[in-house]
Image (cartoon, rainbow, N blue to C red; front, side):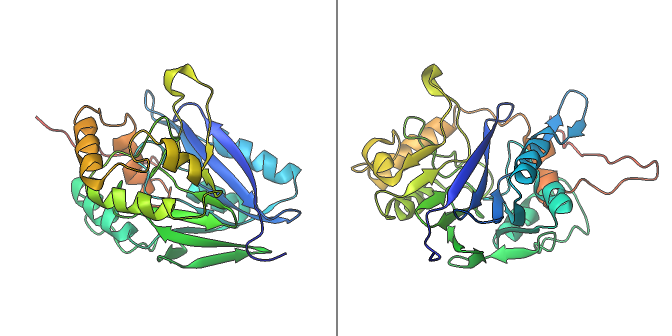
Length: 288
């Protein structure tokens, strides 16, 4: 089987954060990668738990799968990443796009974290555009797609691409661009790069919200996006998209878990170091 083998993709939907985690492997293979795992967090009492990771690990164990890599598509603002916890449990290596340092510098300043290393050293590998990871008979290629954040990566494996928050299902459109470092014009160009992939490429999105009450979905195709994405289908110009995206972003509230999530996610999913009483604490900047 060649590195372009059609991957087997298993999805896990987290209804609390509307996030989809993916286990990706070659047919018949015993090695896999996991993309965008979730660490559970209850903002009402500050409790961190691992029920989402437990579900993924139960699947891995029952199928005899060894995780080679745990990947994030970007530094998530709407949930804590399970990257570190899943790596600890499985011995996998952690990877993310190499522009993560840009995001770390931004939020280390916002959270006033003096001495925080903003060099991506919390991860085992920082992926540049075009870098590859091979596991058994499948090769995954990193594709740099900034715009939602300055550090977003999509991952192409065989006939599948995992796009994180860059694109959603066609009836929901595209990612917001109003976070620090976001840029609607850059997102448009990143989307066009994804839509230049072969038309039958299977596209797996990072979230779904079931607009209009439809069933939750996470798989579409490049052809379906080009024909029907409500924000960026073929025929919509960059100027039109930027106007639409900026107008929509101006109406959106910040994600509920943004403040706790980002200070954990820039640490690759590790909690802040415990203080003298053995408890870890998150910081919340106040504004007046």
